[in-house]
Length: 171
Image (cartoon, rainbow, N blue to C red; front, side, top):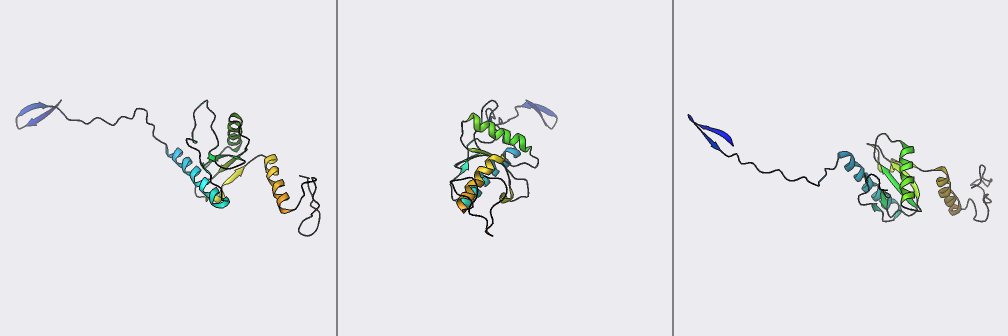
């Protein structure tokens, strides 16, 4: 009740208040989470546009639950277990460790990679982190496809564009 004064006399009238909407069970999404979720969608669209595949953001991929293994942030990217990070300062070792742990816990055969973009960077400027051995697996496939090496041995017989043998390590 609240007091209302009308002239000299005071009366007691009930104050009508509307109940606030219930927020029980509803969690507000932080700006950070919205930014991360948006980057996952943006990254999937960029990959689709540049490869012709049909990847998508994994439902409920960001944040995860404590004690439960999360899956890859993007689905439909054959061969890659993508951990997408949209942060200004990233500990790449921790991020790759997270991707590798989630890959192992979900029994995924894909190659773990971390893709990071900072503010004011285009999606195509995102950085990609993966283990050297995984890079060499991809690079060998490229060398085979381009004819720099053949599938029979581990050394190039094709030579480079100048007709010289490729130097360096054997893949």
